[in-house]
Image 1 (cartoon, helix red, strand yellow):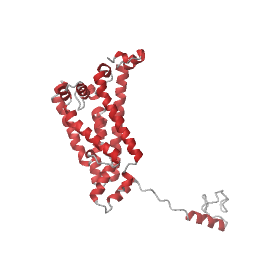
Image 2 (cartoon, one colour):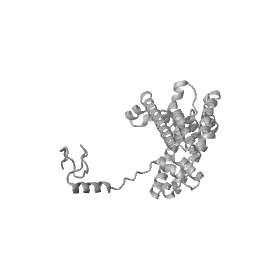
Image 3 (cartoon, chains in turn blue, cyan):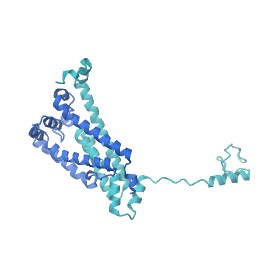
Image 4 (cartoon, helix red, strand yellow):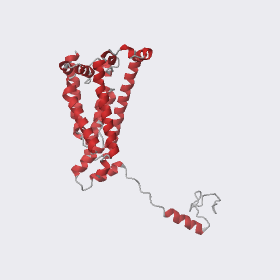
Amino acid sequence: MDDSVTRLDRTRRRAELAKFFCGAALACAIPVFLRFAPAWAERFYPRCLWRMATGLYCPGCGTLRALQSLAMFDFEGAFLYNPFLFLLVAPLVFYLCAIYLIRAITGRRVPSILSSPSAVWPVAGAIAGVWIFRNVFPLGLG
Amino acid sequence: MYCSNCGMKFPDSAYRCPNCGAEPANAAQAEAARTEYTNLEPVQAEPVFSERVQAERSSPAGDAAARGDVSRKVENHLVKSIIATICCCMPFGVVSIVYSAKVGPLLQANNIDAALEASKKANMWGNLSIGVGILVQALWLILYSTVFMDTIKDGSFGGYFN
């Protein structure tokens, strides 16, 4: 493949970088709100559709409470609310951020492990496993 | 000009009557129209994406490299379908994951068109799921929360900043 086609030009690189930092700032605003205006933030809490429909926990349940505990520096509570957030999701998020940043800075695309053909079934299996585990051992949610 | 055979009116540039197919009586004019017609540049069709990918893959540049390029170009939208499944509307999200899973094997089987189709569907179902999720959360916020009312009433976010 011709490199000049896949490589981002200077303006695109800057736009990607700007997008990254806007997204990061928005993401960082969430724990700040959770710490300094918890009662206000609580009114915007999203409801889990899966839990509303079935009464069971989904893999994402407890994420917001975990973030709130984290914002209050209660690390043990945060971990118990959603251990998979720290064990699986956080490393993946850092990995994807790194890939995005490398692309935004160098302009060259780094293939993500998630876009490889063999990634889908392990990931789907992990989600299903987490889904079952949560409902058997709710930990901090129970 | 008018057709000498059937009398129908047709444009001067035509070298045959569109009605009956007869050539114009004026031979010189007919000849001019014909040469103009046949000298047109043949339209070069832009190769469609799947053909380009196919061509690249069969290029001698190295199969492994080509395969890397292809799997990079045909997105499997896995991240989107995961987010859609867990945070939004789960049934649609699962459909998205299933299509996402089809992309890789189809690419490996060199079935680029089907892979593109699966990729498009994974994206579509993911978007649908995220849309439904956002819609339901917004409805929830409007129907069951007084966020907006409080904010409108005293403009101080209901005194919730302490």
